[in-house]
Image (cartoon, rainbow, N blue to C red; front, side):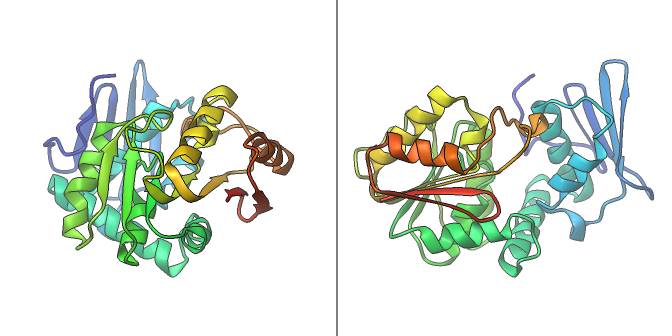
Length: 267
């Protein structure tokens, strides 16, 4: 796949990258169809409907279509870009709507963000931030926070959107297993729905890196799934015993509990 620029210009109502085209039509449900080696997505979404809630809608719409993580992510970007004119305006709309739903409790992920916000102490470094909704939520509450992600595009997007939302978030492009910051750089390190994207060995390395950086505590959250959701990039599943084993492997005091998935809090 060629390098994705989420802010690149596109025709009004139509966005294309590689073999994926997303088009806004006057009416009709979200529809996904494959034509030879191309994927064509049509929808009639409005600006008010552009938010992180689309993850669930897209997931439900692709049950009969073989989807990889790249195609899922390109579809999400295309839905945002084809609905609201103007590259940055479209993303500001998406972020503002998503943050509103996370804060008012209507988003599926809201209980997870609520619990993460309760668990952090002091300054925060967030691993695998993706769009950066949790860092933005923490920044809005006055927390000094650094968002990190391996994809430069997501951090460039966060850098562009945060000022439009009146928020400040530091960003860092890096691998979660090798974060270029000194030991004890943050009071809390968070890894919220990250470890299900990596195998056991890499997950252990990421956890060790989080412990190196955190002065006070590490907060890990994972989904509980019967089967790893491939279109979301999940490669392994967790349950409470697996989290307890992970906690014991650190040699540190820890707590494991269930709350819309599983949690491991170390320190």
